[in-house]
Length: 47
Length: 130
Image (cartoon, rainbow over all chains, first blue to last red; front, side, top):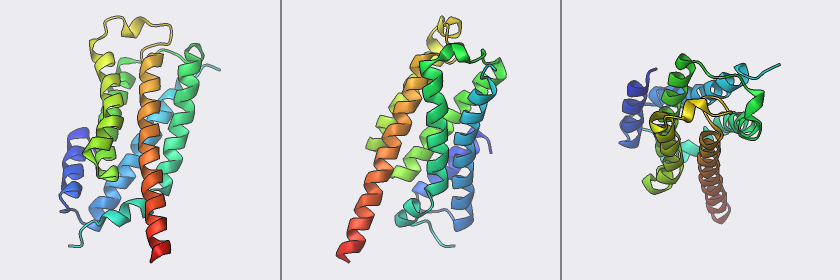
């Protein structure tokens, strides 16, 4: 999910217009995002 | 269609909390020992910036508070601002991200954690009172 799509979904949830599936998708994406930040940095760690 | 209810926000957070802790751990190490890390590539920089943008939006939804999110988001926005406007940013000894940005992200995640923790306590208290 790109940033714009994520922003739209975030707004939909804030407006209480999102379904359970969309909320699950949002939470999964947020989890993945945090994980990716961590992974990017870990991958750059020198041996 | 069943709409998302505020109380569901807390219940679905444990996995995210784990990842926040993981991200904080590595960011802390980066900020304290930037020399341990290689320089980020252009692609990695872009990805990191996009991820930070997403996190800001995510905070707003999960905390449900524009004011509190502004505190967390403010730190992330500052990180992005530094990344985009500081000409010397990419020449720091810490590599492209810079220790200041790493600290800003840690602060933002800390604010977010505090809010989630406080909300969880309120929820527990409410359940105890019945």
